[in-house]
Each structure stands twice: as structure tokens, then as C-alpha cells.
Amino acid sequence: MAASRNSPALPHVATARSIHTWHLVNLLSLDAVAVGLTWQLVFTLQFLHRFPTPVESLIIGISIWLAYTADRILDARRLQTDLPHSSRHSFHDQFQILMCFLWIIAFGFNVILIANFTNADQITWGMGCLLIVLLYLLNAQKNNRAVRQIPKELQAGLIFGFGVSLVCWPVVSQQITLNLLVATLITGTLFSINCATVAYWERQIDQAQLFSAWTTQRNATPAPLAIALSLQLALILALLSIDLLPTFISHCLLSSTACMTIAIFANHKHEQTSRRKQNTRLTRSPQVRELLADLSLILPPATLIIWRVYLG
Image (tube, rainbow, N blue to C red; front, side):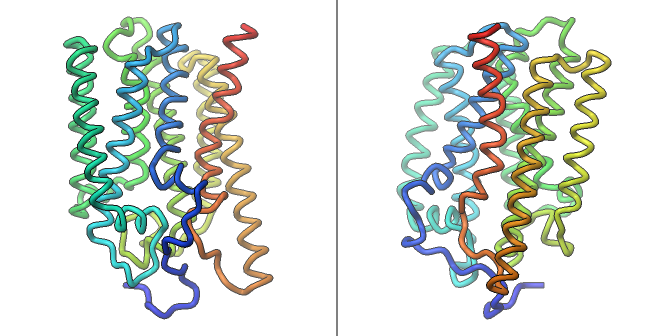
């Protein structure tokens, strides 16, 4: 059922005035790029024992930006601006022509990089990932009921996990293929929890716009997030104990999961306090709390990378 347009519990429509300079990291999808580059570094250090090359980082960074920006442009095209909506959707609606122009330039530049600096195996794996992303975007826009049996957040997280590990797949030896597969799936699950967390924080906006999310079909609470994080921690420890998950990437996953747990708990307490004081829901998006989930995926592995590189 569509949300009432006059409901006081819904967030206010985002406007240009609500967009601050520090919001641009989120509005331009640069936070997603930062997460992707950080975890690409984790995977190359773990499985290839080297840093990614500048070209590898450029290709994955631009590819992530292209995917996120395309999704947001498509969402903005069907945005009902008279209903509550997020700042990032308002931004892509307001600057749709500019973002499309930048998208075309970035796409062309990425094609040039891929054509000149990658080999046949890397292109094959990359095309496979591209096909999966395109299917995801098409299904997300068509709202296919059969595909919706798999939550959108889980799909996005697993695809993101495959993307950040992509550089390893064409060259990894058969002896560690299983370890790479397990690491990719567990990392993708962590990204899925990240997506589910943001969806929970923006549940009123998704309900108003009739966007597909795990929160729109039920009276959502933080309980599923807490259960997912607990299972994630237990699974990481179990896989580490039987040597299916390498130590370094396990530590990155454990620390990120712990930080995300703290971010979710802190935001939940903040929401409760705000409602008691004002008897209203938190209104503006994005806010600092909505960047905490992404920071949970950047700061812990970045710290462990520095520790590994400089302290052994």
C-alpha cells in the first residue's frame, strides 16, 4: 500500500538546500568506490601477494561508479518528487543530464582502459561480471517477482563481492580457488548486510516511493540485522578454524562486522532518543549515520592493510 502523502511520520522531500558539500561523497557514489578499492586491495594482498596496479584500480573504481550511478539514474527517472525521497535520488533527478553525460565519458574511458591494458582471460571474467550487473539492473527496474524471491540487498552485495575479487579469478592457482570462492561469498554477505542496513535506515523513503527493499513488505525492525551480523561472525570464525578462510581476510571481515554492529546499535539508540525528544522520525538523508556503514567497510581493513604492509 502506498504511503500517505500527508503522513507526519515520513521524511521530508529532499531539496537542493539540504545537500551539503560533505554529502557529495555519498551523492556521487564515491563512498561505494572507496569501499570497492579497499577490498580489492585486501583480495590482491591476500591471494596475489601484491598491490593492485593503478590500471586495475582505475577499472574497478570506474566500473563500480558506473553501476551505482546507472542504478540511481534509472531510479530517478521513475521518482515521484512530490513524495518523500532521498537526497541522492533528488540529486540524480535534478542533475540527470549532467550525470548521464559524465556516465558516458566514464564508460568510454573504461572501455579504452580495458581494451589496452587487460588480457583475454581478464576480459572474459569481466564480461561475465558485467552481464550479471546488467541483469541485476534490468530486474531491479522491472520489479520481477520471481527475482524478488532473492532480496535485492543480497543480490547487490554478492555482485559487489565478486567485483572486488575479480582481479584474482583469472590468475589464482587451483589450489586456492576454494579459499577465494569462500572469501568472495563471505565478503559479499557482509556487503549484503551493509545494503540491508542502509535499506532499514531509509525504509520510510522506500515505502513512500514503492522501491523494492527487504523493509517494504513487513514491519521492519533491527532484529534481522542483528541476527545476520551474529551469524556472519560465527561463520567467519568457523571457516577460519578449518582453514577455509585465510587469516588476513578473516581479520578484515571480523573487524568490519564488529564496526558495523556498533554503527547499527549507535544509530538505533540515536533514533530512539530522537523520537522520545521530538516524537518524530529522523528526516533528512543522507546523514552522518548513513555513511557509518560504509566507513565500517573501509577503516578496519585499511588499518589492517597498513599494519600488514609496514609492520609485517
